[in-house]
Length: 124
Image 1 (tube, rainbow, N blue to C red):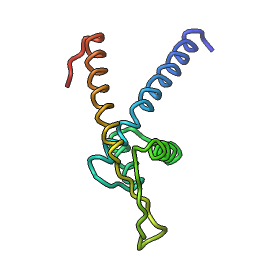
Image 2 (tube, one colour):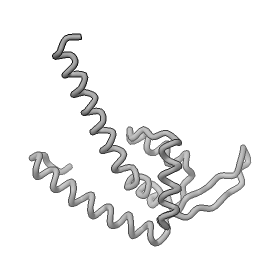
Image 3 (tube, helix red, strand yellow):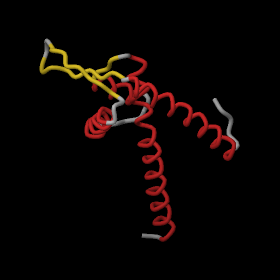
Image 4 (cartoon, helix red, strand yellow):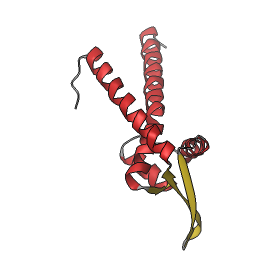
């Protein structure tokens, strides 16, 4: 393999890793925002919203995050019988979750401002 092709391949791998890490870093924020906007949400609805926003997430990524947020006191859930299968678990933000979301929103806004200042890009 030609050395410039190897360098290009390695740069692409590192770029892909960086983008993947950025996406992972905002998933919690996005999940809390989705639940907040809908009041109560079923996990497949969260997955659907994330996919619509091109933040493709698999169940194996979502469920551990939901469990961690629940264990941290940010989410509560209730079971509801389903007419077409097993019972469904609906998630809702707790007061702690609302507070966490508010704090993350403020931090996100500050981070965006800082990144835009450094990269000289305009805020949309």
